[in-house]
Amino acid sequence: MIKAAFLLPLLLPLLLFGLGSPAAAQEGPSVVKVGVWINAVEKVDVPSQTFTIDFYLWFKYRGERPDIEFLRGAPSSMVLIRQEENYLEYRIKGTYVGSLNFRGFPFDEHLLTVELEDKHRGVRELVFEPDLEESGLDPNLAIPGWEAKGFRLYVDEHVYPDENYSKFGFGIVVYRAKISAFFKYFFPILIITLISLLTFSISVKNFGQRVGICVTTLMSAVAYHLAALSGLPSLGYLTLFDRIMLVVYTLFLYNLMVSVQAMRLVEGGRVKQAEEFETRMQNLLPLVFLGLFAVYVLLLGLL
Image 1 (cartoon, helix red, strand yellow):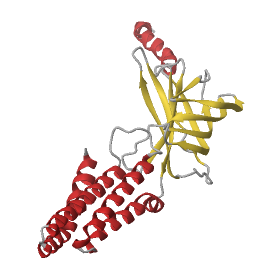
Image 2 (tube, rainbow, N blue to C red):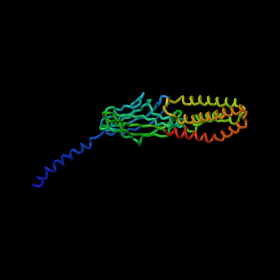
Image 3 (cartoon, one colour):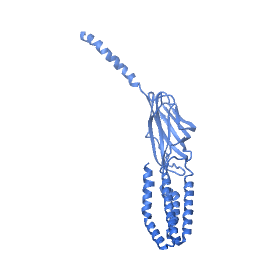
Image 4 (cartoon, rainbow, N blue to C red):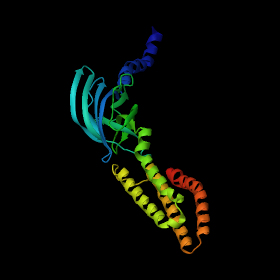
């Protein structure tokens, strides 16, 4: 009894700490599980870099219900589908801004993302967690002009000067079909380039026809280039299509310079020398093309 009375003051703080531990365990941010099911991506507006999407969004939570807001866009329709204890589900349709990267155009891929966060509670009060098991895409999802190949959910921290907020996002990867993009964008310019290079098969004596073909195909290539890029927003960098067109323009310049030099030799009465000059330039054409491709397409692509 004496020993128990002696140990009681020592055990009392431990007992009090043990009783307080459940309350301490309850402290910390509330975890809200978020899931998404994408019904449709109705439109990808390339010039404005926006997209319209229709999706279900649900929240599994404990305690206070989340009060969310969307970043980089707003829903045009947000209908409450289901509300139960610790569960909310909405069907949402809206237009959102996508950070699209066109460096690989026309073989470009884009991650169309929608992001949201709680209006009032920061990361010390609320954090999001993706519901990976139930989220996904409609199996019959079709996007006009695009193909879909990936879906992802993620959680990040949005930093503000006064407080950080948990940010939930989801996205879908869209891309242009490679074969159709090639025939739509590159095959016509390939035909124009081949027509221009056919001038090497015309006699150097007919230099008027040769120069005429070079100039006509060059103007056609410029017009086609501008038409192909008309559907893109104003960009501060070169796309893959731009770099390919730089190769084409330089080949046209090379062809025109050869034709002009051959014309000068013919006018000076040196027809044989003009033919030999043209043959040398024609043999150098594959090396010129490879050099231009390495500089414009590969080297500029790394910058």
